[in-house]
Image (cartoon, rainbow, N blue to C red; front, side, top):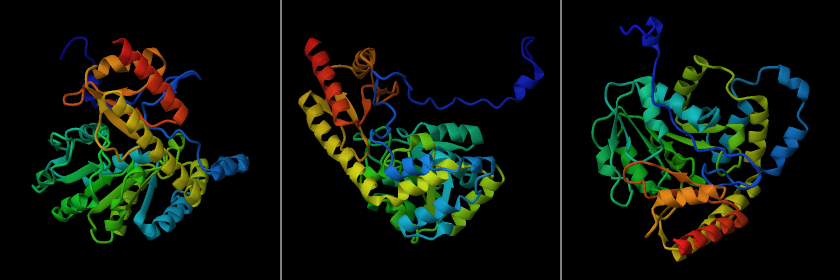
Length: 357
């Protein structure tokens, strides 16, 4: 043992942590790097927070999160015992990894995907194997037919933005009856059909979603999973062995109001889809290419200018986008869809930069 190393230091669990997107401050910043929703939450969220009983905060929240669980069950037309709620989808996914990926066989997921997956595997000592996306960043479904200890797929994928059709997802689930398959649907409301429609057909399927994107509530940290009652019970058993009071009262009440307002949810989601389409046309005019997006962001690359150079130029002008210094995607930028005014500022600056290079 080195003379500079204390005995207790050798017992510290060490992992390479997930690196979140930058959180710049200031009114002059245009923040298009963390896929937040550019619109405010539903009006009922503001109303319930304004009228909240302040004295009630001295009491613990409902550990079952019953009000929100029931509201989500009603929204998705499932039973309440098929719904699990946690502190953001990251919390739900981390608990799902801990609960379901408990084998000496490797968990399978794509080589380009949400970079938290390998972090949780390292943290919980879960073996895993990366399956390469094809040259167009699509899932190769046959890669998931082999024996495994579980599967996790983000659909739409991040950072590529690609939505795989439900038939592809069902094929993977159907070919893995002895494994838990988790579909991480953080962006599905901007895409197509959700795998939630399959949960009554496949008891090994868990679908995870979030309030952070389409419901404009990243700051509230609400995520949820929907699956068979047996999977949800297993998740709750781990939760109650870990932290009973996970979601605070304000998040529970605000979450209920967000789910209730179906009109506002539909309206703002469609608005982002419309701005995304307009942005695709503008990016194409400026010499960018990108996959067809099913998310609230685009994954773009320029025909002549390196992504890192564009990222740095934008950052110098207080416009933040996401750059990944990773193999296969180091010449792409992930750009969140903002308001029309924000996107105009982005395109004005990009046009200026491109014309001056």
